[in-house]
Length: 475
Image 1: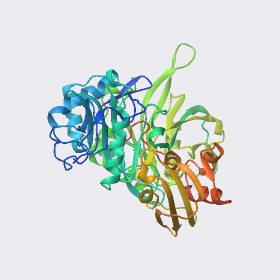
Image 2 (image 1 turned 120 degrees about the vertical axis):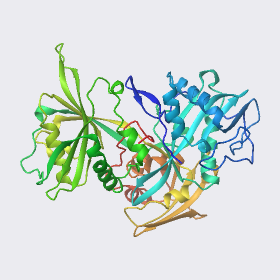
Image 3 (image 1 turned 135 degrees about the horizontal axis):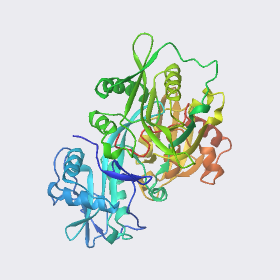
Image 4 (image 1 turned 90 degrees about the vertical axis):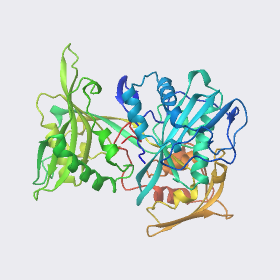
């Protein structure tokens, strides 16, 4: 059973190969009008859903029907989703998308037999503070322009989260919204931030005390590089919060390099760092591009697609290599908010950065999710959670954590903090702080001193970030 989906989305006006995840043609404020059977379930993973199988969710009866997509319904469903984003699907693209889609976790809303809304779940493993947890990647979300403001998106969101809870699937859901204002009402909060960096290459002089190690950086062909990339990525992602697993299908999409999808840039280059003993310890994927130089001409740009390093020496050596490429005035890269690069430079202002929200998280099951990560300090905390969209989460939860172990369960004890589900999603990966949310009036301290300790306990060692930019859950 494969969990990856392919498609197209526009990012900065450019058409790219990507899952149309978490955004698009949505939205409504109520779920009236959608019919679903109260007891039926989707078929087992790996099997096609017949047309009479309905998704479990408590909805109001009317002209619409919410259920899993059947085999013969997949093509019109996929075309409908693409159309909500103003795009077409070729037969080849439809075949690729079908091969990657689990119909048992693919929803549609039908109006007189025609799909008018859809959303899918793609299961991934995500690194969280202290471990790795399964996460439901939400994608392929759309509502036909003829059926907006009728509760269709709300119905699909409720059905997905209800299924995660009742079937005890993934305790966490995550998506990368195309419109950030949509998903807070469903309990999603912004949990990772990407740092879009624009580097003035001629000004990138490294500090004289920078430790580059004694390894080497070499350019390799894609076939040579791929097994090394996979090995390096797996070593880095298990210790980097916000990085998901990558299976064969994920790598195939990550390294897809079709000429018409390069935005005028070159094919991918593969720079691999090896230490003194010959072990691969880092890589940089990049392209050569160009941008207007302000005087009617163009200037060379290196577009760094992805960079991973197993050591600080490999990281520094890879950036020295990139900064040494001739005929280039600028290097573009999206990294973490606390990216080390500026601290390696004599002139830190050579790197200008702009933050952008990336992964939004939702705790489908508060107790299981909070017990699944570790905390920076011993903690005995009672949270009063307000969750009107997933009412099973509402109420007080006692979180006890010590020595890497955590337990969370319902309680009647007095609460220390009060907050909504969306704020729990925002702080879960250790980036957004409880104190910052409290300063915005989104977290209420009910016991003196609880806020500062809880905020410190939830924070991670480094800022969480997702290396795929806008691509989750595709790779």
